[in-house]
Length: 481
Image (cartoon, rainbow, N blue to C red; front, side, top):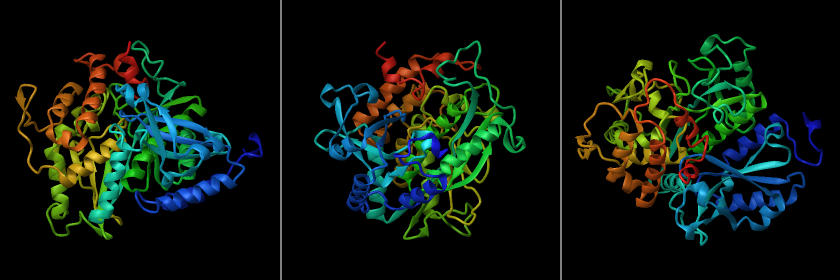
Protein backbone atom coordinates (compact mmCIF):
# COMPACT_ATOMS: atom_id res chain seq x y z
CA UNK A 1 0.00 0.00 0.00
CA UNK A 2 2.89 2.39 0.78
CA UNK A 3 4.16 2.39 -2.82
CA UNK A 4 0.88 3.88 -4.04
CA UNK A 5 1.75 7.30 -2.54
CA UNK A 6 4.69 9.68 -3.04
CA UNK A 7 7.42 8.79 -0.57
CA UNK A 8 7.83 12.40 0.59
CA UNK A 9 4.42 12.37 2.29
CA UNK A 10 3.58 10.58 5.51
CA UNK A 11 2.04 7.12 5.04
CA UNK A 12 1.94 5.33 8.38
CA UNK A 13 0.92 1.71 8.77
CA UNK A 14 -2.36 0.96 10.54
CA UNK A 15 -0.39 -0.33 13.54
CA UNK A 16 1.60 2.92 13.77
CA UNK A 17 -1.58 4.98 13.38
CA UNK A 18 -3.37 3.07 16.13
CA UNK A 19 -0.52 3.63 18.56
CA UNK A 20 -0.13 7.34 17.84
CA UNK A 21 -3.85 8.11 17.75
CA UNK A 22 -4.64 6.20 20.95
CA UNK A 23 -1.96 8.16 22.80
CA UNK A 24 -3.23 11.46 21.35
CA UNK A 25 -6.83 10.55 22.25
CA UNK A 26 -6.12 10.58 25.96
CA UNK A 27 -3.69 13.48 25.84
CA UNK A 28 -6.21 16.25 26.51
CA UNK A 29 -9.69 16.62 27.99
CA UNK A 30 -11.87 19.67 27.33
CA UNK A 31 -10.42 22.62 29.20
CA UNK A 32 -7.30 20.77 30.39
CA UNK A 33 -3.79 21.46 29.08
CA UNK A 34 -4.97 23.16 25.92
CA UNK A 35 -2.09 25.63 25.59
CA UNK A 36 0.45 22.86 26.03
CA UNK A 37 -1.35 20.72 23.42
CA UNK A 38 -1.42 23.61 20.95
CA UNK A 39 2.29 24.32 21.41
CA UNK A 40 3.15 20.63 21.04
CA UNK A 41 1.25 20.06 17.80
CA UNK A 42 2.22 23.40 16.24
CA UNK A 43 5.85 22.50 16.83
CA UNK A 44 5.26 19.01 15.42
CA UNK A 45 3.63 20.35 12.26
CA UNK A 46 6.43 22.88 11.82
CA UNK A 47 9.12 20.21 12.04
CA UNK A 48 7.56 17.27 10.15
CA UNK A 49 8.16 17.79 6.44
CA UNK A 50 6.05 14.74 5.53
CA UNK A 51 2.78 16.48 6.52
CA UNK A 52 1.29 18.42 3.62
CA UNK A 53 -2.24 19.31 4.79
CA UNK A 54 -4.46 19.71 7.85
CA UNK A 55 -8.12 18.68 7.54
CA UNK A 56 -10.40 20.74 9.78
CA UNK A 57 -13.77 19.20 10.68
CA UNK A 58 -16.84 21.11 11.85
CA UNK A 59 -20.58 20.46 11.95
CA UNK A 60 -23.57 22.62 11.05
CA UNK A 61 -26.66 23.03 13.20
CA UNK A 62 -28.37 20.02 11.63
CA UNK A 63 -25.35 17.85 12.44
CA UNK A 64 -23.92 17.40 8.97
CA UNK A 65 -20.13 17.10 9.03
CA UNK A 66 -18.09 19.50 6.88
CA UNK A 67 -14.36 19.38 6.19
CA UNK A 68 -11.80 21.84 4.85
CA UNK A 69 -8.25 20.91 3.85
CA UNK A 70 -5.65 23.58 4.59
CA UNK A 71 -2.13 23.57 3.20
CA UNK A 72 0.08 23.03 6.23
CA UNK A 73 2.11 26.23 5.79
CA UNK A 74 -1.03 28.32 5.39
CA UNK A 75 -2.61 26.63 8.40
CA UNK A 76 0.38 27.30 10.64
CA UNK A 77 0.50 30.94 9.60
CA UNK A 78 -3.25 31.58 10.01
CA UNK A 79 -4.41 29.05 12.63
CA UNK A 80 -5.53 31.85 14.97
CA UNK A 81 -7.73 33.42 12.28
CA UNK A 82 -9.13 30.78 9.94
CA UNK A 83 -12.16 32.31 8.25
CA UNK A 84 -15.27 30.46 7.17
CA UNK A 85 -17.92 31.82 4.82
CA UNK A 86 -20.69 30.02 6.64
CA UNK A 87 -23.85 31.80 5.53
CA UNK A 88 -25.41 29.06 3.42
CA UNK A 89 -23.66 26.08 5.00
CA UNK A 90 -24.78 26.92 8.50
CA UNK A 91 -28.15 28.47 7.80
CA UNK A 92 -27.04 31.78 9.25
CA UNK A 93 -29.46 34.50 8.17
CA UNK A 94 -27.68 37.53 9.61
CA UNK A 95 -25.38 38.90 6.89
CA UNK A 96 -23.21 40.58 9.51
CA UNK A 97 -22.27 37.14 10.84
CA UNK A 98 -21.61 35.66 7.42
CA UNK A 99 -17.92 35.16 8.24
CA UNK A 100 -16.91 33.04 11.20
CA UNK A 101 -13.69 31.82 12.73
CA UNK A 102 -12.73 28.18 12.91
CA UNK A 103 -10.76 27.50 16.07
CA UNK A 104 -8.82 24.20 16.17
CA UNK A 105 -9.44 21.95 19.16
CA UNK A 106 -5.92 20.58 19.52
CA UNK A 107 -7.06 17.78 21.80
CA UNK A 108 -8.80 16.18 18.79
CA UNK A 109 -5.59 15.95 16.69
CA UNK A 110 -5.36 12.64 14.75
CA UNK A 111 -3.13 11.13 12.06
CA UNK A 112 -5.04 9.82 9.03
CA UNK A 113 -4.67 6.62 7.01
CA UNK A 114 -3.38 7.36 3.52
CA UNK A 115 -5.59 4.82 1.74
CA UNK A 116 -8.73 6.60 3.00
CA UNK A 117 -7.76 10.30 3.16
CA UNK A 118 -4.60 10.56 1.05
CA UNK A 119 -0.99 10.65 2.22
CA UNK A 120 0.48 13.36 4.41
CA UNK A 121 -2.72 14.48 6.15
CA UNK A 122 -3.75 15.02 9.76
CA UNK A 123 -7.16 15.95 11.15
CA UNK A 124 -8.44 18.34 13.83
CA UNK A 125 -12.02 19.07 14.91
CA UNK A 126 -12.85 22.76 15.19
CA UNK A 127 -15.30 24.99 17.00
CA UNK A 128 -16.82 28.10 15.44
CA UNK A 129 -16.82 31.61 16.85
CA UNK A 130 -17.59 35.15 15.77
CA UNK A 131 -14.76 37.16 14.21
CA UNK A 132 -13.97 38.79 17.56
CA UNK A 133 -13.62 35.39 19.22
CA UNK A 134 -16.95 35.52 21.05
CA UNK A 135 -19.26 32.49 21.08
CA UNK A 136 -21.27 31.67 17.97
CA UNK A 137 -24.80 30.82 19.10
CA UNK A 138 -25.40 28.11 16.46
CA UNK A 139 -22.26 26.06 17.17
CA UNK A 140 -23.43 23.09 19.23
CA UNK A 141 -19.92 21.71 19.65
CA UNK A 142 -19.08 24.77 21.73
CA UNK A 143 -22.18 24.16 23.88
CA UNK A 144 -21.11 20.59 24.62
CA UNK A 145 -17.46 21.54 25.07
CA UNK A 146 -18.28 24.13 27.71
CA UNK A 147 -20.73 21.87 29.53
CA UNK A 148 -18.32 18.92 29.73
CA UNK A 149 -15.61 21.27 30.98
CA UNK A 150 -17.92 22.73 33.65
CA UNK A 151 -19.03 19.27 34.80
CA UNK A 152 -15.41 18.33 35.34
CA UNK A 153 -14.15 21.55 36.88
CA UNK A 154 -17.17 22.65 38.95
CA UNK A 155 -18.88 19.35 39.84
CA UNK A 156 -16.02 16.86 39.47
CA UNK A 157 -18.16 14.72 37.13
CA UNK A 158 -16.64 12.71 34.28
CA UNK A 159 -18.78 11.51 31.38
CA UNK A 160 -18.40 8.08 29.75
CA UNK A 161 -20.50 7.78 26.60
CA UNK A 162 -20.78 5.55 23.56
CA UNK A 163 -23.17 5.83 20.62
CA UNK A 164 -23.91 2.45 19.01
CA UNK A 165 -24.72 3.61 15.50
CA UNK A 166 -26.37 1.31 12.96
CA UNK A 167 -26.30 1.69 9.18
CA UNK A 168 -27.16 -0.08 5.93
CA UNK A 169 -24.82 -1.08 3.11
CA UNK A 170 -26.52 -0.30 -0.22
CA UNK A 171 -25.66 -1.13 -3.81
CA UNK A 172 -23.99 1.56 -5.91
CA UNK A 173 -22.31 4.82 -5.04
CA UNK A 174 -24.40 7.88 -4.08
CA UNK A 175 -27.46 5.67 -3.72
CA UNK A 176 -29.23 8.25 -1.55
CA UNK A 177 -28.74 11.16 -3.96
CA UNK A 178 -30.01 8.94 -6.79
CA UNK A 179 -33.01 7.59 -4.86
CA UNK A 180 -36.30 7.25 -6.73
CA UNK A 181 -39.67 6.01 -5.49
CA UNK A 182 -40.09 3.47 -8.23
CA UNK A 183 -36.77 1.68 -7.63
CA UNK A 184 -35.98 2.25 -3.96
CA UNK A 185 -32.72 1.01 -2.46
CA UNK A 186 -31.00 -2.29 -3.25
CA UNK A 187 -29.26 -4.13 -0.44
CA UNK A 188 -25.73 -5.42 -0.95
CA UNK A 189 -26.24 -8.51 1.19
CA UNK A 190 -29.13 -10.72 2.25
CA UNK A 191 -27.18 -11.76 5.33
CA UNK A 192 -27.39 -10.17 8.72
CA UNK A 193 -26.63 -10.55 12.41
CA UNK A 194 -24.80 -13.74 13.40
CA UNK A 195 -25.33 -15.80 10.26
CA UNK A 196 -23.49 -13.82 7.57
CA UNK A 197 -20.85 -15.87 5.79
CA UNK A 198 -17.22 -14.85 6.40
CA UNK A 199 -16.73 -13.66 2.79
CA UNK A 200 -20.16 -12.02 2.46
CA UNK A 201 -19.82 -8.49 0.98
CA UNK A 202 -21.23 -7.06 4.21
CA UNK A 203 -18.62 -8.91 6.28
CA UNK A 204 -15.84 -7.64 4.03
CA UNK A 205 -17.09 -4.08 4.47
CA UNK A 206 -17.33 -4.50 8.24
CA UNK A 207 -13.78 -5.87 8.38
CA UNK A 208 -12.39 -2.95 6.37
CA UNK A 209 -14.26 -0.37 8.41
CA UNK A 210 -13.14 -2.00 11.65
CA UNK A 211 -9.52 -1.72 10.52
CA UNK A 212 -9.84 1.99 9.71
CA UNK A 213 -11.58 2.66 13.04
CA UNK A 214 -8.84 0.80 14.89
CA UNK A 215 -6.21 2.94 13.17
CA UNK A 216 -8.02 6.12 14.27
CA UNK A 217 -7.88 5.06 17.94
CA UNK A 218 -11.54 4.11 18.37
CA UNK A 219 -10.60 1.10 20.52
CA UNK A 220 -13.02 -1.33 18.91
CA UNK A 221 -15.20 -3.62 20.99
CA UNK A 222 -17.57 -5.51 18.67
CA UNK A 223 -17.84 -5.47 14.87
CA UNK A 224 -20.90 -7.19 13.46
CA UNK A 225 -23.76 -7.22 10.99
CA UNK A 226 -27.07 -6.23 12.59
CA UNK A 227 -30.57 -7.76 12.59
CA UNK A 228 -31.79 -6.57 9.18
CA UNK A 229 -30.24 -7.72 5.89
CA UNK A 230 -27.16 -5.67 4.92
CA UNK A 231 -27.25 -3.80 8.26
CA UNK A 232 -24.13 -3.17 10.36
CA UNK A 233 -23.11 -1.86 13.78
CA UNK A 234 -19.51 -1.39 14.94
CA UNK A 235 -19.12 -0.58 18.63
CA UNK A 236 -16.18 1.01 20.40
CA UNK A 237 -15.01 2.02 23.85
CA UNK A 238 -16.86 4.83 25.70
CA UNK A 239 -15.21 8.25 25.76
CA UNK A 240 -15.98 11.63 27.31
CA UNK A 241 -19.05 13.28 25.79
CA UNK A 242 -17.23 15.67 23.44
CA UNK A 243 -14.96 12.91 22.15
CA UNK A 244 -17.95 10.58 21.75
CA UNK A 245 -19.72 13.17 19.58
CA UNK A 246 -16.59 13.68 17.48
CA UNK A 247 -16.25 9.93 17.09
CA UNK A 248 -19.80 9.52 15.80
CA UNK A 249 -19.15 12.13 13.11
CA UNK A 250 -15.88 10.47 12.19
CA UNK A 251 -17.41 6.96 12.30
CA UNK A 252 -20.06 7.87 9.74
CA UNK A 253 -17.53 9.56 7.45
CA UNK A 254 -15.21 6.53 7.63
CA UNK A 255 -18.11 4.19 6.87
CA UNK A 256 -19.21 6.25 3.88
CA UNK A 257 -15.71 6.46 2.42
CA UNK A 258 -14.94 2.78 3.04
CA UNK A 259 -18.20 1.83 1.32
CA UNK A 260 -17.49 4.19 -1.59
CA UNK A 261 -14.05 2.62 -2.04
CA UNK A 262 -15.86 -0.72 -2.49
CA UNK A 263 -18.47 0.69 -4.89
CA UNK A 264 -21.25 0.84 -2.27
CA UNK A 265 -23.11 3.41 -0.15
CA UNK A 266 -23.20 3.39 3.64
CA UNK A 267 -26.54 4.91 4.64
CA UNK A 268 -27.49 6.27 8.05
CA UNK A 269 -31.09 7.05 7.22
CA UNK A 270 -33.18 5.86 10.15
CA UNK A 271 -35.58 3.87 7.92
CA UNK A 272 -34.32 3.60 4.34
CA UNK A 273 -36.43 0.51 3.53
CA UNK A 274 -39.97 -0.28 4.64
CA UNK A 275 -40.75 -3.67 6.11
CA UNK A 276 -37.46 -4.32 7.89
CA UNK A 277 -35.80 -2.95 11.02
CA UNK A 278 -34.49 0.60 10.88
CA UNK A 279 -31.28 2.19 12.11
CA UNK A 280 -30.85 3.53 15.60
CA UNK A 281 -27.96 5.00 17.57
CA UNK A 282 -28.58 4.01 21.21
CA UNK A 283 -26.58 6.12 23.63
CA UNK A 284 -24.99 4.50 26.69
CA UNK A 285 -24.33 7.04 29.45
CA UNK A 286 -22.40 6.54 32.68
CA UNK A 287 -21.12 9.23 35.03
CA UNK A 288 -18.43 9.16 37.71
CA UNK A 289 -17.44 11.61 40.43
CA UNK A 290 -13.84 11.29 41.60
CA UNK A 291 -13.84 7.83 40.03
CA UNK A 292 -16.96 6.62 41.88
CA UNK A 293 -19.94 5.37 39.85
CA UNK A 294 -22.65 8.03 40.14
CA UNK A 295 -25.47 5.75 38.95
CA UNK A 296 -24.67 2.61 40.97
CA UNK A 297 -27.28 1.68 43.57
CA UNK A 298 -26.69 -1.82 44.87
CA UNK A 299 -29.68 -3.30 46.60
CA UNK A 300 -32.19 -0.90 45.08
CA UNK A 301 -35.06 -2.25 42.99
CA UNK A 302 -33.79 -0.50 39.87
CA UNK A 303 -30.08 -1.09 40.59
CA UNK A 304 -29.74 2.67 40.33
CA UNK A 305 -28.67 5.24 42.89
CA UNK A 306 -30.93 8.17 43.76
CA UNK A 307 -28.89 10.24 41.29
CA UNK A 308 -29.43 7.61 38.59
CA UNK A 309 -33.17 7.42 39.20
CA UNK A 310 -33.44 11.20 39.12
CA UNK A 311 -31.47 11.31 35.85
CA UNK A 312 -33.94 8.88 34.27
CA UNK A 313 -37.00 10.70 35.60
CA UNK A 314 -35.79 14.05 34.27
CA UNK A 315 -35.22 12.61 30.79
CA UNK A 316 -38.62 10.91 30.84
CA UNK A 317 -40.30 14.13 31.98
CA UNK A 318 -38.84 16.02 29.01
CA UNK A 319 -39.02 13.16 26.49
CA UNK A 320 -41.51 14.88 24.17
CA UNK A 321 -39.51 18.13 24.21
CA UNK A 322 -36.31 16.23 23.37
CA UNK A 323 -37.83 14.28 20.51
CA UNK A 324 -36.95 16.72 17.71
CA UNK A 325 -33.32 16.65 18.84
CA UNK A 326 -33.10 12.86 19.17
CA UNK A 327 -35.17 12.08 16.03
CA UNK A 328 -34.36 15.07 13.84
CA UNK A 329 -35.75 14.16 10.40
CA UNK A 330 -38.96 13.11 8.70
CA UNK A 331 -37.45 9.69 8.03
CA UNK A 332 -36.39 9.23 11.67
CA UNK A 333 -40.04 8.90 12.75
CA UNK A 334 -40.56 5.94 10.43
CA UNK A 335 -38.21 3.94 12.65
CA UNK A 336 -40.45 4.55 15.67
CA UNK A 337 -42.76 1.70 14.69
CA UNK A 338 -44.03 -0.55 17.53
CA UNK A 339 -44.33 -3.41 15.04
CA UNK A 340 -40.53 -3.51 14.96
CA UNK A 341 -40.15 -3.16 18.74
CA UNK A 342 -38.99 0.42 18.37
CA UNK A 343 -38.38 2.48 21.53
CA UNK A 344 -41.50 4.63 21.79
CA UNK A 345 -42.83 4.22 25.35
CA UNK A 346 -41.87 6.90 27.87
CA UNK A 347 -40.63 4.62 30.62
CA UNK A 348 -37.48 2.99 31.97
CA UNK A 349 -37.03 -0.80 32.18
CA UNK A 350 -34.20 -3.27 32.41
CA UNK A 351 -34.70 -4.84 29.01
CA UNK A 352 -37.96 -4.00 27.18
CA UNK A 353 -37.05 -2.87 23.64
CA UNK A 354 -40.05 -0.53 23.42
CA UNK A 355 -38.84 1.58 26.39
CA UNK A 356 -36.96 4.75 25.55
CA UNK A 357 -34.66 4.15 28.56
CA UNK A 358 -33.17 0.83 29.66
CA UNK A 359 -30.70 -0.17 32.36
CA UNK A 360 -28.46 -2.93 30.95
CA UNK A 361 -26.94 -5.46 33.39
CA UNK A 362 -23.82 -4.17 35.12
CA UNK A 363 -20.67 -5.76 33.72
CA UNK A 364 -17.10 -4.93 34.53
CA UNK A 365 -17.61 -1.25 33.82
CA UNK A 366 -19.85 1.45 35.27
CA UNK A 367 -23.64 1.42 35.65
CA UNK A 368 -25.16 2.49 32.33
CA UNK A 369 -28.35 4.32 31.41
CA UNK A 370 -29.16 3.58 27.78
CA UNK A 371 -31.20 6.08 25.76
CA UNK A 372 -32.68 4.05 22.90
CA UNK A 373 -34.87 6.56 21.03
CA UNK A 374 -31.96 8.16 19.14
CA UNK A 375 -31.65 8.17 15.35
CA UNK A 376 -28.27 8.01 13.55
CA UNK A 377 -28.84 11.39 11.86
CA UNK A 378 -28.67 13.47 15.04
CA UNK A 379 -26.43 16.43 15.65
CA UNK A 380 -24.43 14.50 18.29
CA UNK A 381 -23.19 17.65 20.04
CA UNK A 382 -26.72 18.98 20.43
CA UNK A 383 -28.10 15.57 21.42
CA UNK A 384 -25.51 14.83 24.12
CA UNK A 385 -25.64 18.37 25.51
CA UNK A 386 -29.44 18.29 25.85
CA UNK A 387 -29.47 14.75 27.27
CA UNK A 388 -26.77 15.40 29.88
CA UNK A 389 -28.10 18.74 30.99
CA UNK A 390 -31.70 17.50 31.07
CA UNK A 391 -30.71 14.42 33.07
CA UNK A 392 -28.74 16.45 35.58
CA UNK A 393 -30.73 19.69 35.75
CA UNK A 394 -34.16 19.21 34.17
CA UNK A 395 -37.57 19.02 35.80
CA UNK A 396 -38.61 15.88 37.67
CA UNK A 397 -42.27 16.29 36.67
CA UNK A 398 -43.70 16.43 33.13
CA UNK A 399 -44.91 19.80 31.97
CA UNK A 400 -48.64 20.05 31.26
CA UNK A 401 -48.59 22.84 28.69
CA UNK A 402 -51.09 22.75 25.84
CA UNK A 403 -49.40 21.40 22.71
CA UNK A 404 -51.20 21.40 19.37
CA UNK A 405 -54.59 21.76 21.06
CA UNK A 406 -54.15 18.90 23.54
CA UNK A 407 -52.33 18.33 26.78
CA UNK A 408 -48.92 16.64 26.43
CA UNK A 409 -49.66 13.71 28.76
CA UNK A 410 -48.79 10.97 26.34
CA UNK A 411 -47.20 7.64 27.18
CA UNK A 412 -45.34 7.60 23.88
CA UNK A 413 -42.98 10.02 22.20
CA UNK A 414 -44.22 11.78 19.00
CA UNK A 415 -44.60 9.55 15.94
CA UNK A 416 -44.11 12.32 13.37
CA UNK A 417 -41.95 15.39 12.94
CA UNK A 418 -44.88 17.83 13.00
CA UNK A 419 -45.84 16.91 16.57
CA UNK A 420 -42.18 16.89 17.58
CA UNK A 421 -41.76 20.44 16.26
CA UNK A 422 -44.78 21.61 18.27
CA UNK A 423 -43.45 20.08 21.49
CA UNK A 424 -39.98 21.53 20.90
CA UNK A 425 -41.22 25.00 19.97
CA UNK A 426 -43.49 25.32 23.03
CA UNK A 427 -40.86 24.08 25.50
CA UNK A 428 -39.49 26.65 27.93
CA UNK A 429 -36.85 24.12 28.96
CA UNK A 430 -35.51 23.97 25.40
CA UNK A 431 -35.33 27.77 25.34
CA UNK A 432 -33.39 27.74 28.60
CA UNK A 433 -31.04 25.04 27.33
CA UNK A 434 -30.34 26.42 23.87
CA UNK A 435 -31.15 30.10 23.92
CA UNK A 436 -33.74 31.78 21.71
CA UNK A 437 -31.57 32.18 18.59
CA UNK A 438 -30.40 28.57 18.33
CA UNK A 439 -33.83 27.18 19.17
CA UNK A 440 -35.63 29.28 16.56
CA UNK A 441 -33.09 28.56 13.83
CA UNK A 442 -33.27 24.82 14.54
CA UNK A 443 -37.08 24.90 14.33
CA UNK A 444 -36.91 26.89 11.09
CA UNK A 445 -34.62 24.36 9.42
CA UNK A 446 -36.69 21.38 10.62
CA UNK A 447 -39.88 23.06 9.45
CA UNK A 448 -38.45 23.34 5.92
CA UNK A 449 -38.00 19.56 5.96
CA UNK A 450 -41.51 18.91 7.21
CA UNK A 451 -43.07 21.18 4.57
CA UNK A 452 -41.28 19.31 1.77
CA UNK A 453 -42.57 15.91 2.85
CA UNK A 454 -46.17 14.65 2.96
CA UNK A 455 -47.69 14.83 6.43
CA UNK A 456 -49.29 11.40 6.10
CA UNK A 457 -46.36 9.38 4.88
CA UNK A 458 -48.01 5.99 4.50
CA UNK A 459 -46.03 2.77 4.50
CA UNK A 460 -43.55 3.49 1.69
CA UNK A 461 -40.44 5.65 1.91
CA UNK A 462 -40.89 8.76 -0.24
CA UNK A 463 -38.32 10.58 -2.41
CA UNK A 464 -38.83 13.84 -0.53
CA UNK A 465 -37.80 12.48 2.88
CA UNK A 466 -34.61 11.06 1.35
CA UNK A 467 -33.56 13.81 -1.08
CA UNK A 468 -34.30 16.66 1.36
CA UNK A 469 -32.60 14.91 4.27
CA UNK A 470 -29.96 17.08 5.92
CA UNK A 471 -27.16 14.50 5.53
CA UNK A 472 -27.94 14.02 1.83
CA UNK A 473 -28.75 17.52 0.57
CA UNK A 474 -28.17 20.71 2.51
CA UNK A 475 -31.70 21.57 3.58
CA UNK A 476 -31.12 25.26 3.98
CA UNK A 477 -30.09 25.51 0.33
CA UNK A 478 -33.33 23.83 -0.71
CA UNK A 479 -35.26 26.50 1.15
CA UNK A 480 -33.92 29.08 -1.31
CA UNK A 481 -35.53 27.35 -4.32
